[in-house]
Amino acid sequence: MLKGQVKYPELFNKELLSAAFEEGLFINTVARKFGVSYKTIERYASLLGVLPTKLYDPGYSRRGTAQDTGATWISNGYRSVYAPSNPMATKGVVAEHRLVMSEVLGRPLSSEEVVHHINGNPLDNHPENLMLTSKTKNLGYAAKLAWKLYRWALDNPAEAENLVGSFAPSTTKREDSES
Image (cartoon, rainbow, N blue to C red; front, side, top):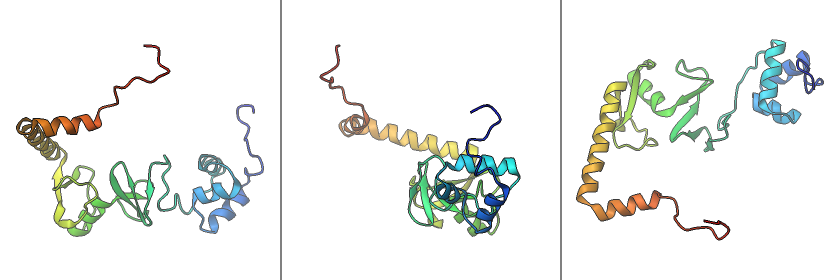
């Protein structure tokens, strides 16, 4: 394929893509329908000037890291929600803890505002577990937690060694290794 040519000329059709998006299909659903990747559909839609009505269906991760749980999914340790109309949404997705805090406050959060999980569990998004803070203060909370963990490790060396050992890679040699 030469540069500038399209790989799927039958899909490089404005009417075909427009009709698919007018049905209210998501980009990844259209891609599955035609047996191509969502990137191909994104590229062709962009080249043809066709705007999709919906980006990605809930539970779909472009990177394949999301664990589908229905209307929400877990990505990078945080629960995300498909909410394309929300002003805080990035590509139609909002972190659930930010969404909960914005509902509590009755306004969207700015990019400078950080939502801190008081108990340290990023999946516990109950309003009483969330606290609005700044980026600097949130780093301070992380430092305090690290200090408490360090003090605990000093007071409980055997438990700390077991905990650290559970994360360490195996030191056993493979049979097929030469060294």
